[in-house]
Length: 79
Image: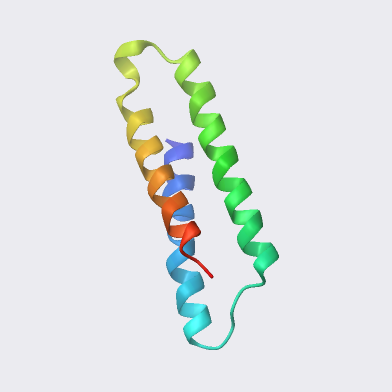
């Protein structure tokens, strides 16, 4: 539950960065790199959870992984 909430908040970041840039306040490229690393770490943690979660209860983790991948794609489109 907590991981899911965190990932949903994380999903809002790319849009916020686009809005900030359009208003003349772009984020430093180092921040974008930090976000990409954080996204990769989230994916790693989801993988670890898969190992420890019974097979019938992995659907929520599949949804988190899909969200994580969509965030990764959004982060890659940032300048």
